[in-house]
Length: 362
Image (cartoon, rainbow, N blue to C red):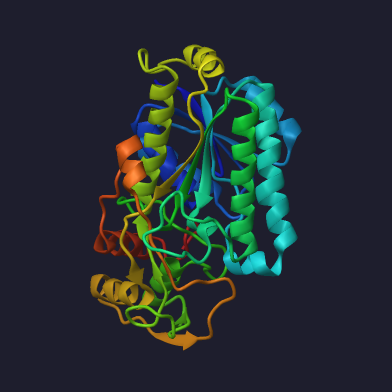
């Protein structure tokens, strides 16, 4: 077994898929999640898929006392930090909630990590930190300027991580800026299960296809794009999960290239000495843009179901086009997205068919 990793938000959509990828790569996983927008059933299913019970702790990252208990009970190599609120529209309506949860929660987590000398950190950032991009594709050095409080909360954490890396050279901080995660595990056992009405596009499309929702609302059809609808870089969630494994592997190699940090003791000793990474932002995307209408068409072809939709006014905070340059991820991490839009639609449709009510009993 490789090093032990704390995964905050590990019961969520991206976190649960990453737990599987981490296990397959030989890591030991401890999940910490407050279940505010996730399900305990996701962890149960992950445990079944990997044939091993995952340690699960229900808790909020703002609860520093509980965090101290967790760190005192485990020797972690590092933390993957997914825990956070993520709905753009909700963030516009409730900005204080987003800053409290996403920014204050991360600060509390980092403070406890520092107390226990765990200084390897992979942060779930977002392409929203780039705002309305001046040029495409978007590179890691592109200007950062957010258009909504959700993006501002992610960018605020990035600034905190940058300052932390400058102040203390023993920190190794990777911010993975992902674009638009979609899809599901090929088993159909875990996938995206939003509470109430979906905020993200793909689960909305799939719920229309399965008959749970009447029609899809497409926000804006007058953007300067191929068909007037917004263009995004959709990435399969299992590709994204592999990106987190690649980031941890990179940290291990940088901290102790000769021994590859095969145990926690070595990892802790060398991280204190080396700190060779600092703050490192990396895009995770496919490098290709797909419009909303193109995704609707692809899903209809895969599912053999009509997808009813209507155009409505643009949504506050949305932009016309956004897709990545993923060259840095390939060069540094040896990672690139492998799965296609068709794969994304097929796996989403399998998940939706097998779980029409998500993790709730059918």
